[in-house]
Length: 86
Image 1 (cartoon, helix red, strand yellow):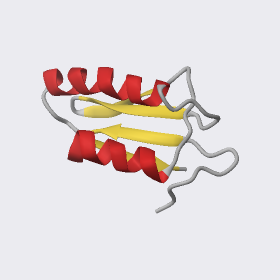
Image 2 (image 1 turned 180 degrees about the vertical axis):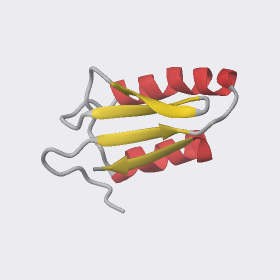
Image 3 (image 1 turned 120 degrees about the vertical axis):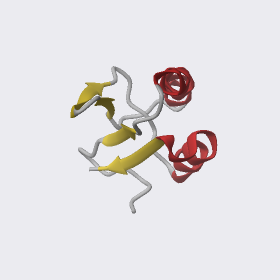
Image 4 (image 1 turned 120 degrees about the horizontal axis):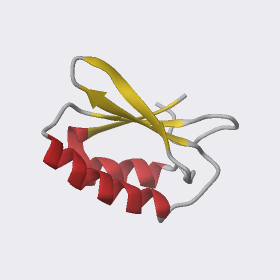
């Protein structure tokens, strides 16, 4: 899997279908993590919406996608978040 974003790639972050309180707590921490690593890569969150398709929310700030960011996300969030470049 790619760990460095290329031109015109987007970082997609898919949120697992965990209890709402776990997701809400993770969003605050994720927001701070992304803001601490600004860069040109757009970020789109995919948030579960019950039985329907996930909601997509494009963040207003891009990030500097890197192997270090991916490792930090895995360390902090485990299987709660899935990151993919597309």
